Image (cartoon, rainbow, N blue to C red):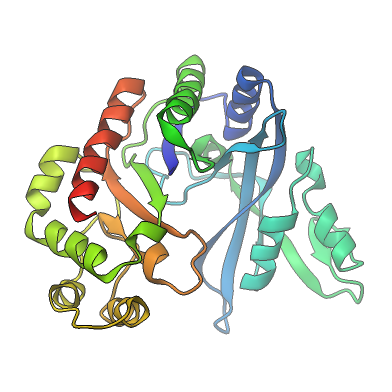
Length: 310
C-alpha cells in the first residue's frame, strides 16, 4: 500500500524545506523534479499542462522514500498574488508526462536540463525550445504561498513495520516544522489493485459501500471539508449489482461506461482501467491527522471494511 498525506507547511517553510528536513531524519538526499497536473485548456482547445515543483527523498540504498508535490485543490487561505516565475507549463500531455519522468536532478535549476538534452534544445528567458526554436515548456508566475502545499506521497509500503516507520518519520518532521492541516485535508490510502481484479470481489465492494455508505462514514470519520468525495454513481452500482457471467475485463469496461470516476469515496479507476497510472484501489474518505496513532487507526478501520469484500 502507499499513502498520500496532505499537509500545509508553516509560513517560512515550503515542501522543499520539508523534504530536506525529512531527508536529514532518514539520512537520505533530496532530488528535484516536476509534478504534472492539468488545469483547463488554452485558446484553440490545447490542454494547459502545468508542471509544479516537486521534491523527493532518496534513501541511502537508492530507493525513493516519498515524493512531495503540490495539490491544486489546496488553495484555501493561501495568498493568491503571483510572486515569482516558478511554475512551468506545456500544451502537450505526453511532453508533460515525459518531463515528470526524466526531470529529477540534484538542484531545482537543473530540472529542464534533461529535456534540453533530449531535444538538443536551449533555454531562453525561462522557455525551453527545441533545436529549431519551437517552444516546448514555458515558465509562469505562481504565488509563493503555493509552495507551502505539501502532499507527501510514499512509496509502496510493505508490512506494518515499514508503514509505521515511514508515517512516524513524516509526521515527526511535520510537527518539527510546525505544519498544519489544510481545511480540505484528507489521507488517501492506495492498495494493490491485483486482489480486486475479480468480478465477485469488486462487485461486493461497490454494492456494500453503496448500501452502507453512512456506516462507512461513521467508521472512518472523513473530513467534512474534503473535496471530491461522493458515493458511486447510480449506474455503476447497477452494473455491480448484476454483473452477469462475464470475465473481469468485460465487467471493468461496463463500470467505465457506467461512469466510474476518481472523485468518489473509493476510487476504482486504478483497478478497472487497462493501463492505469496508479494500479491501485484508492480509499479517499480518510481523515488526515498529525498523530501517528490516529493515522494507523484510520488505516486499520479502512482495512476492516475492505476485508468484508475480500
